[in-house]
Amino acid sequence: MGELGKLHQLIIPFFGHNITINLEVVLMTWIVISALLLFGFIAGKNREMLPRPIQALGELIVSQLYGLTEDALGKEYAKTYSPLICALFIFLLFSNWLGIIPHLEEPTKDLNTTLGLGIMGFVIAHYAGIKSKGFKAYAKEYFQPIFFMMPLNLIGEIAKIVSISFRLFGNIMGGSIIILVVSHLVYSVALPPFLYAFFGLFVGTIQAFVFTMLTVVYISVQVK
Amino acid sequence: MTVDTQTIVSVAAYAGGGLAMGLGAIGAAIGEGYTAARANLAVSRSPENSGEIFKNMLVGQAVAESASIFALVIAILLLFLDVPQPTLLKAAALFAAGISMGLGAIGSGVGSGYPGGEACFGISRQPAAASQLTTNMLIGSAVCQTPAIFSMVVALILMFLNLGNSAVNPTWAAYLGAGISMGLAAIGSGYGGGLAAGASCAGIARQPKTAANVTTTMLVGQAVSQTPSIFGLLISFILMFKTFPATGSISAAMALLAAGICMGFGGIGPGIGNGMAAEGAVRWVARNVESAGDLMRIMLVGQAVSQSTAIYAMVVSLVLIFVL
Image (cartoon, rainbow over the protein chains, first blue to last red):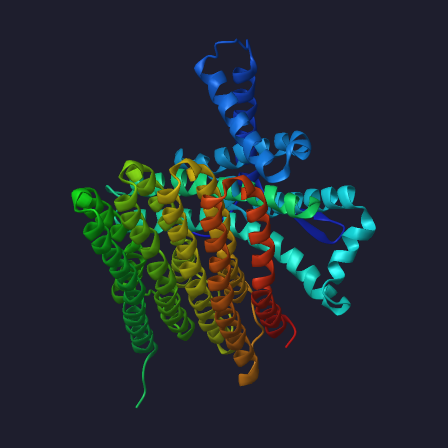
């Protein structure tokens, strides 16, 4: 039970401020990145007309996500943004699934990861909006319906980052807290595998998909 | 008469446990009743599929019950928890845990009955799509549970995390506020997510070919319906983890309690409203799949406007916590 809320941190003093690095999260993120690179390398090597299973899996992921991006953004933007969307989805999927392996933890359990990805999506969506509409038309939207609504519109945009990143963080962290407490209460007998299947595999997949889709839809709201 | 701290902690734990299960029983029962009612209608329309419908009804009700089961777990934990160092703060935290879980189970319980009911009815219209309907119902009602899961997390943190040696006076109100904020804000979101999931089951029964688009729209719609409950979670995290300076005055404590109440009530309406927007979008995606992209975009813009009231509530809560 003592594990609840405990973190390994590296604290570096820096001109009177402390820079805090959550070591476990960095390590777990690198594990996910290495696994993805390995998967990409194996799936992309020796491509054949008649695909081997792992190449077929890679093609399935890419084509499905390309289709989803195309539905929401149209053909032209899909070419630009689908690689990003695809990478985001498989990164989140691997991250959310990592917790089912003993001694490993989901990087998405840490708010810094999800907030970082949320801010990334926000910046990309607004960049896409400015690029497609021009800065004037983009800025004008903040003064709708009347000019003094500007601060509230601004807060509304920032609340999108809060909601998208806290949704993923809350689900993954909530799942891991429930698994920890329930496993402790039943002395790790019988229940934990089912909890891992539900919170790790099922909720993890759904939340990875939801995060990715929301990023796509935020971009599509900005560009159209 | 003097009352020792141990007694106060026990009283708070028992009261919290009672509230957790009592309030937590409301929602799931209504949701399961709705599922059963639609199943009856479905059987009367097509008695030859009664076996399939009956099976689907039981599965749907079992999932709808999970919010109540979360409440039961928290209630039992509260009743049998033994606290090593009883303090007045722990008493406030335990009572708040019960409130958070009890209120938080209402919305998800009612909401997750809708996909079950619509799936039963859908099987009577489109028996060939039965397995698709059951899968979609399971995904939809599992996602409906998210606000209840958030409430359970807040309850577990309040019960088990050693929240440090904070000053008793404003912090008791912060814990109560945290429980109320999460519990109330989960009501609207759970119910709204259920509306979207119900519409998606009805839509798949109408047009099984559109299942992929309908499920995608449902998931995005439900996710945005949950935004008010995420604001509630944010406010309750701030209230639980921020350290407040000790004061003798009651006004600082009331500001923290009011912050929780403000965010909690402010989240109910936007959650339901966002769910209605999602319900409409999902229903029309099933009928007109070519414009799925436009429908989803309009749904999202509409939901953003509808949840602006939740954002006002969050701004007022943040002002109450950080400024006053």
